[in-house]
Structure formats: structure tokens, C-alpha cells
Image (cartoon, rainbow, N blue to C red; front, side, top):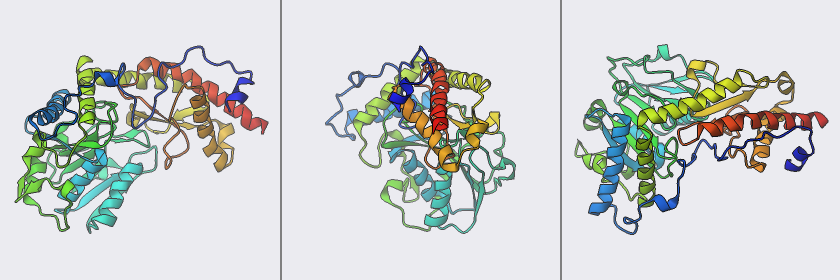
Length: 396
């Protein structure tokens, strides 16, 4: 493919992104990252040592401060990334009342499947929408528990705000915010459980998740006994009381202290930007560059149908050129794959083909670790790659 591209008449853009890493997870490391920046004193020590606990508490304290978390909310490090944190919430808290499950992309659909097929709850309403759309948020019943993703990582569609969430709700709101937190403003008074992992906007490593609990969530944990056996890594209570050590650095299972050090490094970098406001500003600038390009593109459009719900982290692009839409389904699916392969061969953009279960397209990460100048430099390369691939298709 790269050799064919060299033989075309299409001139390559003069400027390349300084970093080609635009993956939507794990995501680009912070600018200037080096393994040599990580503290290593804790390596080979117990996570339950005084030093080990201090390092875990440092992650908790720095995270709380950057997120402006209310004083009565709890934040803890848990096993198995965001997936583990979400499953912990579902298995520990659901079943006390009916639940509304919202899904408009693959991860939300996974939580629906787990609740229906694994927990086998009887009173479940599923509110779904196709990729690019949101379900009808006005039909959500907040007398019930509500489970949703704030930002659909594989669809590039987010809820625009928390105005649709009832202040006087009786149920809990359980929010998977892994590709939203540190990049979008979350209204804490509307959210009872929030989960995320370090490998998204912070550019951290995988393996560990974060769970945030409101006082209402703690009350549910201490008053509700699930009807099913509870795996050890999901248990947040003992004898009907919250195991509050989880939220003071006493993890349920053994964490990677190297990954913890990497998370501390990322949090310090975020503080250097000015905290949450600095992180938000970078993601918004990345989104603004993409929007300006899309406004003039004759072949690409955002997968999100409503600009108010378009993600500024997992930014998903669909191909709308009438020529491309006239191709067979297999050829349409091959187009973005060939574009991403061409850009990877040029070392311009890595890992930008759309998610495997999503509509054919491209997905570009715009989180805070990505330099806005790199997003800006990438966009002419998308035009170049599309022109090259289109010419190759036309030539047969």
C-alpha cells in the first residue's frame, strides 16, 4: 500500500504529527513521558507496607482534588480496570429495585447483557439506540436504578449534560465514565456511582479501575443483600458495613505498584496543566480542530448525528462521499481499514480504524494527552490517505 501511494500524483502533507499515537485505549502517554520519571522505591515492596499504602492514598487524594469530588463521596482503587469497577457496582447494588439500562454502543450493550444474562434480573428495561444516536433520555424512570455510559467510547456519542437526571430520584445512577472523566464536566450531584480506568484520558496503564460512591450508593451497599454469590473482588461490605479501607488505599487484591507510580506521574502532569480546567481545555481544542476540518470536508462526517452529543475524546468519523456509499458493504468496510493501514505505514497515525463492532469508519482519540497540534497536523493526512485509497479503488 505504501509503495502504491508513493507512485500516485497526490502530494503528501508537509507536516507530520509529532506523535502518531491516536489510539482510543490504551491511549497516548502524557507529553514528555519517560519510564525514568517514575519513582521505583516501592517496587519489590508490599502494597500493604506503610510506603505502599501511602502511594495508593496519593493516587486517591490527587484524583479527588483534580476531580473536585464532594467531601462525602468516596474514591477507591479496584481490580480489573473500568470493567471490574462497573461489574463490582452491578453485582453489589442491583436487584433492590427495577433498573433502566441505557445502551448506544458496545460497552453499554455489554452491561445490558450482564444484567439480563448473568444477574438474570426480572425487572429490566432496556433503552437502546443505534450507533451515532442517543436513546430517549426523557423516558428514563428515576424511580428505578439507571445504568449508562457517559461517553460511548466506540460510538463517539456522549450525553450532553446531566440535566436529564432527576434531582429527586429514588434509584441510583450508575455511570461508566471511563472515556469521559478528566475530559468532560460531570455533575456529581446527579451521579451515585462513577467508574473509570487510568488508561484513557490520563494515558495510564491498564489493570486497575476506580470506583466513586455517593452517600446514597453507600447506603444501598449497607442495606441491600444481593440474591447471588458475590466473588471476592466484588465485595465492598463485610457484616453489612462498608469496607472503607478500600477508599484509603487498602486494595482488595494486589495492585501493580509500577502502574500506581505511572498513575501518580499522570496526575502530577494534570496538576501542572491547572488541574481539571487544563485537561478540559486541551480536549476541547482537539475537538475544535476536528470540527473545523469536518465543516469543510466533502467525504467525512461525524458519526454522532447531534453535534451536542459528539464526543471530544473518542471522535468517530464516518465516510459520506456518495462515491463510497455506492460501493458494496464489504468495500465500504474496507475503506477505513485501508486508510488506517496507509497512515500506519507512513507512521502518521496508529490504531485509528473504527471499533470492530461499530459502523465502518475512523476513530481518533482527542483526550488531554494528545497534543492539539498533532490533531491539527493529522487532518490533512486524512484527506491525503482518502484520496489515495479512493484512486486505488477506482483503478480496480
